[in-house]
Length: 74
Image 1 (cartoon, rainbow, N blue to C red):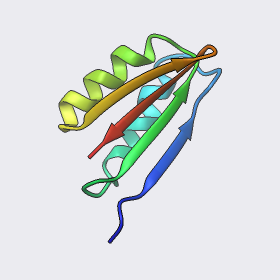
Image 2 (cartoon, helix red, strand yellow; image 1 turned 30 degrees about the horizontal axis):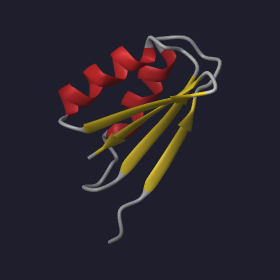
Image 3 (cartoon, one colour; image 1 turned 45 degrees about the vertical axis):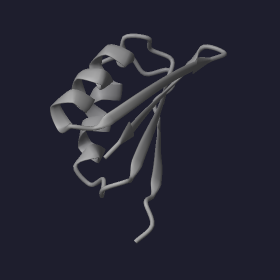
């Protein structure tokens, strides 16, 4: 089975919304799958990095034009 990429767009939402919505999805990630979270809340970086640590996920963060893209890979 090919790894899948999922996108969660929570731009405009403030924490804890990005964390809560991402947390609801990470349990369904298969090995190799990626969840890309798009957010405008810089605090989401901290919360989603903690989620990644708790769930043993790789995390990558990129910021461009006021949008943070936080990738969580199982």
